Image 1 (cartoon, one colour):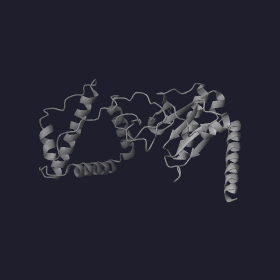
Image 2: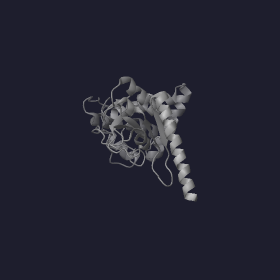
Image 3: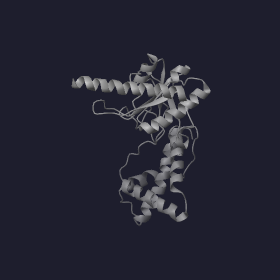
Image 4: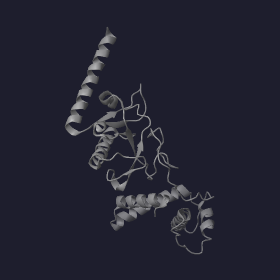
Length: 269
């Protein structure tokens, strides 16, 4: 008897959600559904649209963002796609949605198991596109070195070919003294090649090392017996104090740093 009541209650909730979804589609053109992980069904939060199928367009889904954020993103992307009247294709960049000119990327979904309400409304999922977001360095889940793995943003389709990533190569040293010996051999700062991103970022790392060594040597009164990570952190903190003293905007500087770094490791700058 108790189980029957639970089943009836769940059926009533499901019918209410379905009616509400259909009402949203009739009023707005589509609805966005948010799904939270539970102990019974763990995973990441995700959101997806219902209603774009009726316009001959793929439904949209996004994984790993807070449901409210995912809702906002999908509404903006859906509006762009509906206005264009053209389905998003795998590898297509989606701009003017995230701050700081960060682009999203579309991936056609081969696994649409999660899009239950689409099947409830239309009988099946004709087509769906996952809207994928990059990590802090601008790298997408399928790209080398991305910090966004399946446990954060699972991708339910085949992403496009990953872009090459050109991070500065690890220097074979552990101490500031060894760093000084390595970069001390550089007679002059040299110039960027513009055509070889790996060589250019290796050179940029050495330029940064020069500034770091000057700071470390000054504080050590000419000695370089400091610990690398601690001293580098202290240098960044002191730079922030300098920004305060000069009346410069630290947050704007960090945004510019991130944009430049992302472009440099992707060979775009």
